[in-house]
Every structure is written in structure tokens, then in C-alpha cells.
Length: 359
Image (cartoon, rainbow, N blue to C red; front, side):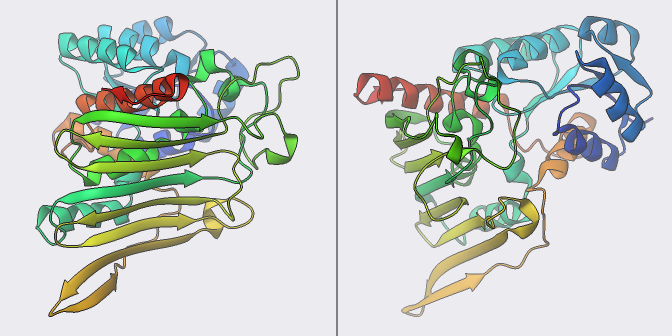
């Protein structure tokens, strides 16, 4: 029998959750959204038989074994905990929650329920990432001592006054929204335990309509915009490894760049996506390289992998199904999500205090 899944949220990420679940052989049996019209339209497109405007009713009336959560960040933790308490496995959009403290509550609920809790860190599911992890595992690259993580945009503010720019709803700006490369770098590094963090945020351009991105949500005239436009940070780990990071929605850079560059004891490497001027996936240039020394000579190799325009989004959702069915190892764990949120919390705290923060 196929695994039965319900989804909360009929927004843009539904295409990847529903598509990935279905590609993995799961059956999407219900969709809940406070906007019943949006739920009905999306359910028709994805052949989902039941729609609800209320999550509690959906959980009570359907026989779903798992739930995908696609809602504004503020609701990640409460909905995940509600679903876990109802005995469902949970696949939650990023970020895990508004803070590390909320993630701890989610972990406690998952442990009490004995259910799988995973997050959509989809860049781990890219073909480039799978290949890099193979090279880490077989010793080709050695231990990753240092890494540089970037997701930088020149004009990428996702609307003004909406939930993305309202800290009480989002938890922050690009640092928490574009956390993927920080996660991917820590993934390559073996997810070491953070020790100290130094960070700074910048709000230049956050109110400037010239820096609005080509996607997102409509502006809300009477809404709030109280998050950063860019964040920079440096993380030291208890292992001695180090990570620098740069994330932005609006910053004076040449073009949108999504990358992890790293240096290991046996080799280095880069996973990169450079977006075109339209900021869309299908015009992007992907690069995957490793850097080695062989017989006293520098050897730089391009790693060929299958194209993946959606940056692993469907594959990530499919991995969740494999993990709960026991056919795949989970691509991420709750403890890793907690470590990531501790780093993010510490960068905001350091930016506020002007001092390094112990994690």
C-alpha cells in the first residue's frame, strides 16, 4: 500500500512537495489551506481528493500517515507539533522554525510520538551534493577544514510589508530565508558542533522598491518591513573547522550567486549556481568542481552530473517518503536542524550585541 500524505499549504512550493511525494509512490490524500479557493484549485491540478480549511479537521478525517507543511515560518513549529501529536510523520519547509528553542520543542514532540521529523533542506538532494558527499565519504577530499557559503542577490527582496519582511512572522530576512548554503556547507563538513559565532546584519536597501525581486508575494501597503537585507558571519566549530557566510536579498553584487566553496585536507571543491538576469532557475549556470594535487601538480576536475533545475526540491520530498518507508536514509536529521538554528540565532544575537556569541 502506498504511503498516504496530507499537505498543509497551497502555495508555490506545493508543486515540489506533491510532485516529490507522488514520484516516490506516495498518495497525497488531502490538502489544507485557509484559502479554500486556492486549496480547491491546487487539489484539482495535483489530483488530491480532499480539501480542508482547518488542519484539525483534516487530521481527524483523513488516514494520512505523514504531513507536509508549507506555510509562513511562524506556523512551522506549532503545526509540526500538532501533526506529530496526532501521530503523523512530518516534512516541514525551511527554515525549521523561528528559533532553536522552537526546534527543541519539535524534536521533543517527534521523540514522544516516535515519528520522523525532516526538513526541506533541498540543496542536499541536488546531484552535485550527492556526488560531493561521495567524495567526502571515500576520502578523496579528506576532512573539510573550511568553507564559504553564499546565497547573494542584488535585487531579491520578496515583496514589502508581507510575511517575508515581518520578523514576527518570518524570524528574519535573508539569513533565515536563504539558509540553504549554510546548511549545505555544514553538511559537507559533517555537521560539526558550533562553538562561537560572529555576525553582522545590514538593512541598506530593505525599503527601496528598486531592489524587489522577480518572485515572492505582493506588497502590503500597511505591512511591516523590519528585517535585514544582508547578513555576514563567521562560525568556528568545536572540531576546529570554520565557516564564513554571506546571504542577502539586496546587496551590491554583480549577480545572484548560490555557492559553497570548501577546502579539505586532501582536496577542495565548489558547488555553484549563477542565476541569469531574470533570476529564474532555467537560465542558471551550474558548476561542480573539485581541486586536487597529483604528483606535484594542480588538478582541477569538473564533475558532470544530471541537470536539476529545481535544485533538488522534488528529490528532497521523495527522500522523506523513502525515509519513513525505510528504503532510504534521511537526508537530514532534527539534531542537524537544531544546530543550524543555533548558528542563525547566534548570528542575529552577535549582530545585535556587536560581540562574538558562544553557542
